[in-house]
Image (cartoon, rainbow, N blue to C red; front, side):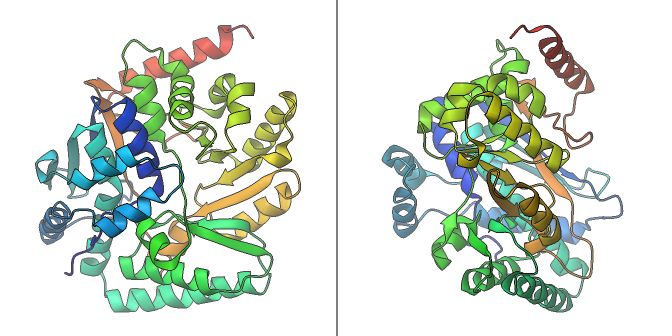
Length: 401
């Protein structure tokens, strides 16, 4: 196989957002990340495992070019000190454990500084996806089915059948291939859409290539590690620590807060007037999206903030039909945006992989997210999840306003 990851810019934008804040505030933190395949009927062969190892070794040989660093430095919230760090940065193959010691036939774990291991997640998942689909199926047939479906769905946005407001492509981690994601971004960037606006992509390499916006701020790891990585913290206040550190780094820039790491209800305890004013919006990633959106609008109104000035960004398992319904429901009441992933980057005549790579340990202690959807969390230690839930419940039931 050709090399899958050919540039260190083939990375979700929020990894650079978080990476800069990690570099400036948490450079001593260490994390463990664990791969999981949620598909019960998927098995990785020994040949696939060997190819994944080869691809990750190739990724670990990459360095940022001066042209790529100049592009990053021109992003308004990226600071020169972080760019200087990236000039020296290189992935370490020694941080990876890759073998067949798992039910699905593929075990991947990474250990090292949070600065390093955070950067491994997205390229690793992109590599696993492309290796699997190229080696398991007739890739040319898959790509043709992908292209055919993509053309049809884009036509429905072009003719106004679907109204999406502002949307972005978020599919790097679960894409069919680099070729497929590039085609999706190119077609969307070139399309003349009726009543919808294609803003950009989470893939910084493709954002640079097609002159669209690199999109993304924070992921669950940010709240998990800033809130639970310091063992003196009460984990029920994880969101406060995460929001505080983010504002310290960015002020009013780059501010879309992720709400569901330890449930949205707990998040709202900390998302009071100062943070709700400073952050430009919030992102939905689990639970009922209508219920969540109504809850956020109500929260802004209680704080005396006009919801029309804030963005509700939806990113949980979206397709154009779901996005259209959400846009029609909330349009005019708030700014509405969508991050659409697998539906744009890996929609073929075979099921997409449901694979994740999550932080499971920070500074020698378990960390977890519990989200608004049961089963979306991932933690090796059920006792820690129980402890986290008890902390959250105690706060929700006993904290006075």
